[in-house]
Amino acid sequence: MSEHVPLQVFSHVARNLREARQQRGLSQEKLAASAEVSRRMLVNIEAGASNVSIATLDRLASALGLTFSELVRAPGSDAPVRVWQGNSGDSHATLLHSLALAHCTLELWQWQLAPGDCYLAAPDPAGCGEIVEVHSGTLQLAYAGGEHTLQAGDTAGYGTEHGYRYHNPGASLLRFQRSIVMPAPG
Image (cartoon, rainbow, N blue to C red; front, side, top):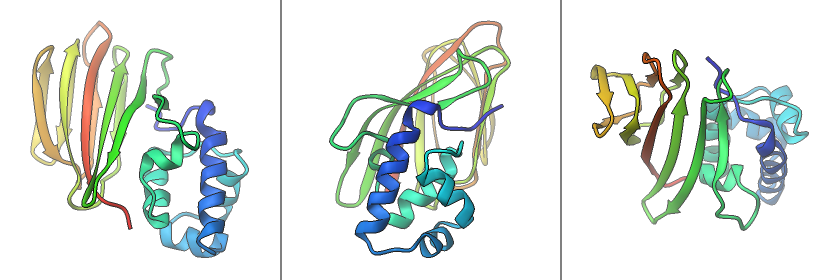
């Protein structure tokens, strides 16, 4: 299981993070402390030289008052961006669209997991939740409310403040869509 950002978004993250930090007049030490990451990791991320988890990017975006999308996309772009790559080349997650509203941010993702692969997510801040819809394959979904097995056409909704896990226990590729709602940053 891997929970890291693929190489293609490193340059966007590095530039967006550095520019946002500098615009806000924050030192690397202050941002690192606010986002609960080490200064060394922050230096490496800003240099585009660190493989970083989605959870770490979430904390950095929140500490800067940015949406996740604003941190990972090229400035001014709404194009889909692959944000996670699993151990298998067939396992990945793509952020399709993000909408920042006054009180919340909505995100739409397309996921796929190779047979046997999984994704373990760190807990999100209180007030976050998601809905998944399975398009093909079998999704074994674990979260605070228990473990559920979803087939093509099935949906589930849950809070993500306790973390969750996606697993493909089947023999075929799993494809599903994920819609997320989060309190507005800042």
